[in-house]
Length: 168
Image 1 (tube, rainbow, N blue to C red):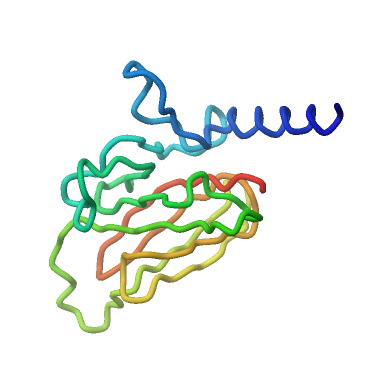
Image 2 (cartoon, helix red, strand yellow):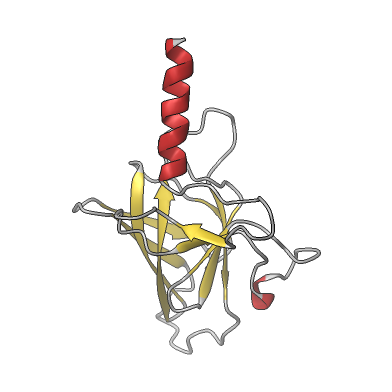
């Protein structure tokens, strides 16, 4: 009985953290706060179709969990939703980064790689990640559970978003 109670408690915490999307009736919201009230996570996890410009390679209406950048220039398609600190089931924190079609920077010194500086909300904890070649498929693991503010830079473009990483 103790294990069952721990499971219910852990499931409740995850649900309250807003780390899942809704797939219920048509009246359910199309998005949920990435981190829930009071966590500082402002980006929303959308459960509807990807934006038209981000659907290349997808079939149908491309419905999946995703987060739009605050400027609307990049979307994180969350194949590993919900993102987790440690995955014990063999899956990964796969994110497909899709940027709005734009002309690359004419400056040859500007890297096309997607540079990610992630800061854990309420702390000074910062980590850097890179997606070689620019927005595209990636596995993005972060060192702690919580709400992460991502500063994204690629080919002379910038955007930001919040992503939540749950405990295992």
